[in-house]
Image (cartoon, rainbow, N blue to C red; front, side, top):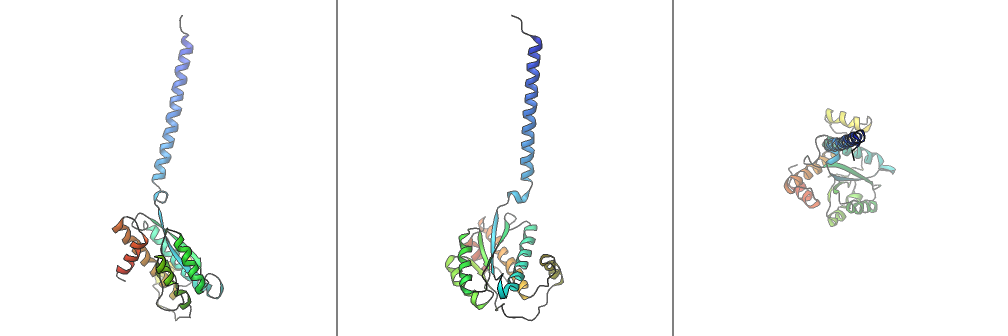
Length: 216
């Protein structure tokens, strides 16, 4: 029996169209995958630093001044490629109300999150007492050398830092709390960076060792 030539030609054309559609779909998927690979934030894992400070009540201005400074430090570090050029940094901020019991409670909450590698806090004698809890939990805890809850004399601030801080804070002027918080946040991220280069991945123990060894 002779084959129908028209039917056979139509079948071949349909198969060609089907193959072209399949190629187009695969090409589109590959393009999407390549685009995703070119987005650094989509492939970089994250590490976290903690900030325990008062965000409500009498000392809320202290807490928000610290928050603006640490956010600025984190934003600038991420813009430079993050920790070790491999990890982006996130900030975890918890409210300790400038109270001793709350500071200990926030320490325990920080420790539950394995991504948190170090914490800034201890702004007063009351909350600095949480240091023992952080040491027991194996978490780096950086605190100011003085009680920041008392009024302090204005400090000399670099004009460039003041301008960057004002953009982050909505125009507020940085004081002693902001100066210390910005410096301490960078010290903590430098320790994460050092731990990344030495161990391949920043860990709590690696950050603790790097903090003490860094020349500050």
